Amino acid sequence: EDGALGAGDPRHVAPRLAEGEAYPYATLGEVEAHGGDFGRKGFKTKFTLEQRERDPLGWIAALPNAMLQVALDTEEADVYDALTNGVDADQQIVAGTAPITGETVTNNALLSREALIVALKQLKNRTWNGRKIVFRGGFDLIVPVGDGDIAQWYISGLELTGVQDANFSYSANLANPLRGINVVESEYIDEGAWYLKGKNLANGVPILEHLGWTKQAQPELRVADDAGNYITGGAVNPMQGSFVNDTIQYRMRQFSGGALYVPDAVIWSDGSGS
Image 1: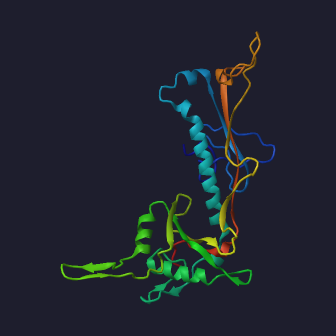
Image 2: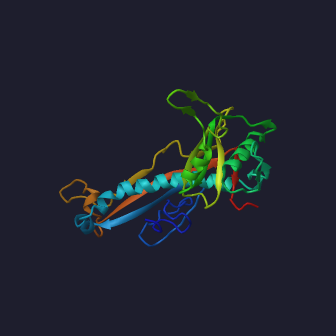
Image 3: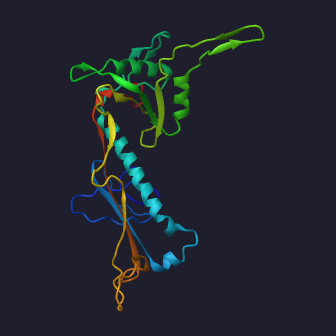
């Protein structure tokens, strides 16, 4: 639930933990911490044996899956944090003129078909380490949630693909300069902003990616093993509750971050038109 895991925005991702820092408890309505850079992240939660037994709606049973969903949200947030924080005014779209229509596109233009054509041209003319950037595999247009349909309409445009009647048939294959752009919606993009990035570079250098730890690539869930032992011998199942007060604790740990390696492979706008 929003507000349960961190003090920042977004508040539904796992908080960044300092070296040696204890895992904070995630509790509904309370916040602990948030960070976006690479490192150890996680949280823990606890419930009583009685809560587990009187769980008519299955909330307790669903906790492991919910905690894993937090981990996935954290990975996504880390990638888009790297994107939005890794670019600045040097990578923004600048004023230009759209070919064919001759329409003027302003600095930080609102999203439009003409703005995308101008942005794509500017992006393809970028250099990195003294050499022209060569893209492979198309481009991603990243927009706020809710803007995907209109973005796709701008990309598709109004294309005449053919004419047919009873006695005549004609097929057309008209070039669309935006055809190689894929639309991605993200809740981590500010309203009005948009980002156009290459999918891959021809030289194999990644542009934007999630960072993980090779020794623990996937999020890890644990249960606290503090239930004690039976007097007759043998360990008590931790799901039976702790030795002290019959509570059960879950913990999620992950190593996560994002990296934008080539900021000039991204062109963006805050949508202000200035």
